[in-house]
Amino acid sequence: MQLFTSTDRYMFRLIVVPLIATLIIAAMLLVLDKMLRLFDFVAREGGPVNVVWQMLANLVPEYLSLAIPVGLMLGILLAFRKLALSSELDVLRAVGIGYRRLLFVPYLFTIGFVVLNLFIVGYFQPMARYSYENLQFELRSGALGASINVGEFNHLGNNMTLRVEESANDGRDLSGIFVRTVSPQGRQLSVSAEHGTFLATDDADTVILRLTNGRLIHNQANFQSPRVLAFESHDLPFDLPQVEQFRGRGGIYRELTLPELLRVGNDPSTPTELRLASRANFHYRLAELAMMFLLPLLAVTLAVPPKRSTSALGVFLSVVMITTFHKICQYGEDVAALGRVDPLIAMWVPFLLFSGLIAWMYYHLAYVPGGQPIGALEKGVAKLWGFIRRLFGRRRLRI
Image (tube, rainbow, N blue to C red):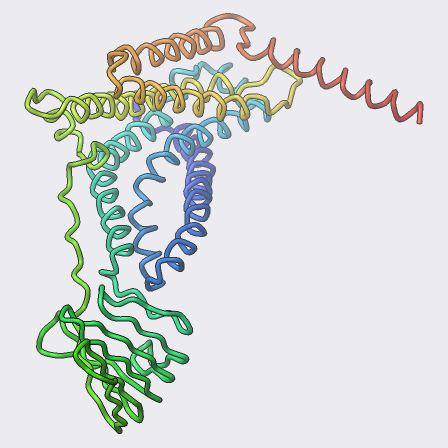
């Protein structure tokens, strides 16, 4: 028996195009929505623009884990919908190729994407999540080299204030400079200069600001009057603010890999809050992966409309059902993390209910003569739409 028949190759071509297109579109929509907020966040913190792309790259695994089930579902659904609307599905079934044989290629896609998603949610996503949080921390703390805002008072450390009128050469050359420093002993130094530039030193924590054509005012508690000095060139060293080190990975359960979640969730020495959250997140990730094995069956049952119907209700229902299951699992994870419900109940009871519903729908479509799981829904929607059209049609006639 030939493993890959011409029908399998045809099914592969029907599925792969909408699957990849939907996957890319879903991931891009999620990335674009986040990109605008990241640009605003980085601009407020005064960080370099290139950090936005680093943060977006760390969000890609999370968005892929959400987009893969949607892309898989719609790719299979649109392929079977095309077969049904063109009556090719009836021809295939008439020559003895049933739904079970037609699902061979969809399940090959499913197994491949389940393995890929397992690596994403089990390893890459936790690591990328930690890197994303690290970038956020460094951006807020100034470790990424926050830029000097022109025309504003910039506080460099606790004892130095800097204001510049113009900036050039990526912030290294400054014009219209005002600097004020206060030493721990009470020594106050106010400097104004026409130009200045930053120079590095042998000490990575110290920078020299070389000022030209300016005036220096030195004041101290034991001075009767401030001392004023005009200069052509003056070097003003100052220490860079100390940057706090970011925490280690593992303090948040979303940054743990699947084996780490299992270990932390069963470790009695772990704090109760982290242990409960780890167990809940472990079952949440597994339930989301297990649901992917049911997507081909759900896609087939929602793809085949009743005879002489071209309704796209099944496409709408597929998105609603997969989103509903995702949200129910998220709610179950939150409740289980609080210790109110066991994760086995919070996650796997909804999974069993969805599994039973999908199995019933597929059985009626594949093995019950004339069975059409969404036929009643389509009739109800058609009646509702007809009522709405008649209602608005009467209103137009009255006008």
